[in-house]
Amino acid sequence: MSTNNNNNEVLLHVENLMMHFPIRRGVFQRQVGAVRAVDGVSFDVKRGETLGLVGESGCGKSTTGRTILQLYKPTAGEVEFDGVNLITLKGEQMRQMRRKIQMIFQDPYASLNPRMTVGQLVGEPLMVHSVATGAEINERVTHLLETVKLNPAFASRYPHEFSGGQRQRIGVARALALQPSFVICDEPISALDVSIQAQVVNLLEELQQQFNLTYLFIAHDLSMVKHISDRIAVMYLGVIVELATRDELHAKPLHPYTQALLSAVPIPDPIADSKRERIILKGDVPSPANPPSGCRFRTRCPIAEGICAESRPDFREIRPGHFVACFFAERYL
Image (tube, rainbow, N blue to C red; front, side, top):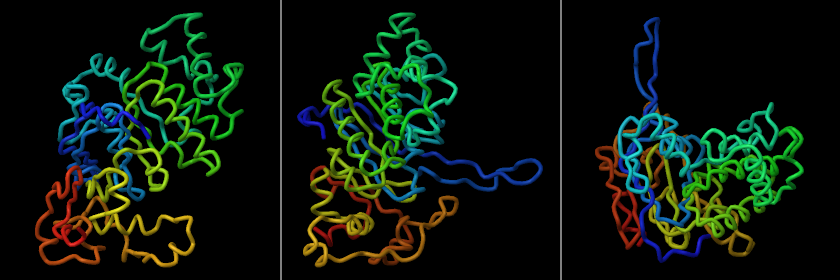
């Protein structure tokens, strides 16, 4: 977790971000609907902090990350990075901006080209952006591999010769090659063994201190997110339902979905664990192609009432810095 919380400067501002993927059918490929993967998401990330983005699989977390990076062109909304609206940038302007925003991908097996050596993989961003040439690239690659605690002699090897944890370190080195200020970590540990996960998270924390990085850390493991994040946003079916500091979110969750997620996190004290109540949600997550009216969570919510089907609850600040999208959040105060 970063320590420079006294800095309240907003580095990334996301407002009402939407990413709808068209559903096409028939010979003429007419659009018959849309998958509302991200459907009106707003949050800020302050310089130097780690914002955790959590939620179950398929809720739109990774799509949010990719849309911020403009790997997908958003359907609507604003993405402002360091005062620049990324959505208006074209071609070369966006390419220059990508030096400041990098991504660590989820699958270290799929995100590295098997035909390139580690030296080529880590050095490629330096070549593409003409930051370094020749011997300078080799020096930078050596330094980057040392930074992520890999032997620089590995530069001539290929990805298949490494374990999952080592491959993810190569991915981290590649993301840091252009000295970005903001890194989107897209479930960087979910494909790794539990024993390796902590090593990679500790490495990310060390690098954050060393290079003053800002992270958007996407994951579905709440205990790991609590460890690394300053604030946590909880996502469900394309919308953010709750956002608060990590301690407040764990101590006093105000949204029924957050309460259910936290009740499933194992705690190391067996006596306390046996006393607490597990919240089992009924039914399955609805399809993002046909989400429920009103509140997205109402079909599985234990306290849903008529108003929940009629209108979508506002994402409002209930306590200082604690935002919730629920009509009845005050019940839990």
